Image 1 (tube, rainbow, N blue to C red):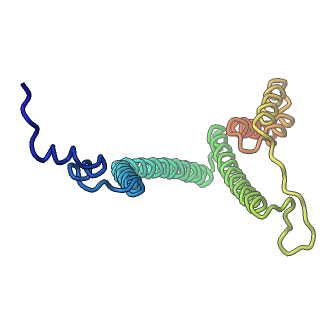
Image 2 (cartoon, rainbow, N blue to C red):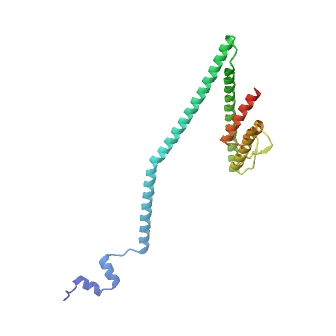
Length: 221
């Protein structure tokens, strides 16, 4: 009922199993070359995938840089406008004061108050700028000291050394700010200002310090 197998299959059956596989499928590569080929295929696939992924992120990185640049430009423009407004205000106050002095008119109390507020704002701006410069200088010194593994920093031009000031932590700064708020509520402006001044790098404490100094200046005036 079954037909006879083809001639070549009959010849294969008569040969050994290894020779039969070799005749049908060709030469079988060694296992080591198979593993190397698979590994190279895996590496090239992942290199291509990573390259394409990084290439797809390039426009996104450029957009982030553009956004950061625009934000900095807007902030710089706002700061410049604020400085220009303050400058114009000081010029207007000086012009009105000169008119009053030329015409021998008593200077109004409101004008004196505006002039005093302008001087206080200018003083606080210079104080804030000096505070920022000191803080940046201190940070640079601490970075250099930590990079060189130095605990104390020598003063330039002297043989003496002094320890770098230790800034309060966030928790300590919050506690000092709370104490300053309590002193401010009690009316102890000098004590509150001293506590706020110890909160280096705390914007809320710095704002409260400016308010204390302003009220102290008005009280002295």
